[in-house]
Amino acid sequence: MTQLELKNVSKIYGDLHALDNVNMKVEKGEWLAIMGPSGSGKSTMMNIIGCMDTPDKGQVLLDGKDISKVSSKEQTVIRRDKIGLIFQQFYLVNYLTALENVMVAQYYHSVPDEKEAMEALRRVGLEDRATHLPSQMSGGEQQRLCVARALINYPEIILADEPTGNLDEANETIVIDLFRKLHEEGTTLIVVTHDPEVAEVAQRTLVLRDGRFVRETVNDHFTGYIKYND
Image 1 (cartoon, rainbow, N blue to C red):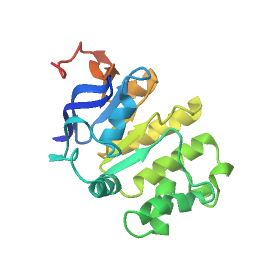
Image 2 (image 1 turned 45 degrees about the vertical axis):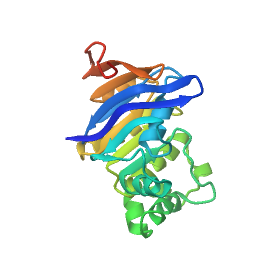
Image 3 (image 1 turned 120 degrees about the horizontal axis):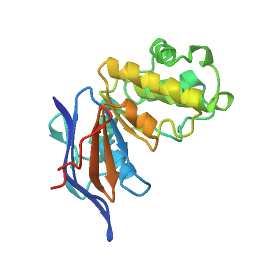
């Protein structure tokens, strides 16, 4: 079942087409990787899918509803209820503990629940770091905390922008294993990455170049240039 669909989506800044008539479908429970060089349109696409920006043309359908024309208030509700965001730069609150950082995300969704927040930390292996500040945690631990924060409201889609970009190999493996578990549980994963090894773990990889999809790989097998933009 198609969960997310982009139809003829364009984002234009002056003479620059950051996204140029893009079409894409993501099935419920799918693990999709998006790759491309800097300036290819990856971040623009993530911002549009994550309801942090809107396209100039086209439609973005989430569960059949066009979310490209909704109000900013409705965008906030969609981000809160349906999408878990994981950023390369973490965006943790430095003066809050790990547990409190997770509970802040709960606050904007419903009511903070310490027991649920601890369970989210347990899922990412950080229950023993609950009272630590971000500055007392390694980069890998901070990224796992971001995963816990994204999970706390049980999102239907996890949207991750370069989630392993600042990590060493050992912590990258831990984060990828967390994604594997989420995928097994039926969560839809959309991961933007520069790392081919991270992309290869996904079920499918789409490559962006100059705001258009140019290649699709399924299960590590190149399937040729796709027809999304024809």
